[in-house]
Length: 266
Image (tube, rainbow, N blue to C red; front, side, top):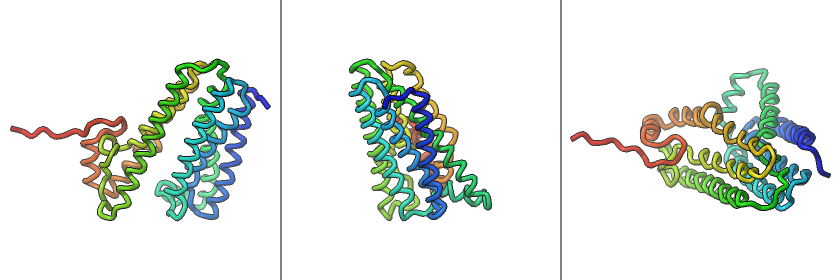
């Protein structure tokens, strides 16, 4: 059944809200609000596939973008569940919120979870735009696929490099400088951001293609000002101290680049 964009967004909001309500009920039992992150990733994938099914754009491109956002969603949601939820204590961010909110924690977490549902709808907008493109294949589609491969492939690589580093007991209390982590303090964030430009390219032949620019812009703001780099680095400084301060001094915060080295005075 084909739907207008407005009704698709409303349906998407209802789907994301229902998912987040279920996950909020789950965290009440487990006392682990970290499940919200995996739910956010899963919601975007579900909405993207739903848009592809209910839009009237070029069918092969709809199938392509559904496969891309679906694969991204499954990979990230599974990674977050295994890395932060199953058999893990509650993430420090959420544990701190729980302590600070005290008796009002459950009510506030419900609002927080539903806010994430709204963010999932916002992040699904580029997919909605792509699925309404009536044009046939163009070079922009190949560009989008290549960008997706670079972004997702290197995000996975950076995550694995960090996991291997953390798995070695002798690295406890040290900062990872392996692979991409030698060139960026947050290569996983950088390549995640790159990944979202894939949908900008795929949307290039669609009406209102510029809407797809919203997500890279919002994500960049979140990484630098809200939920990304500031809390991650505050936690790293608290746990690794001078080793991480040296890492901050020599290593690019976001875009991978060669480490800075001091010039030895003659």
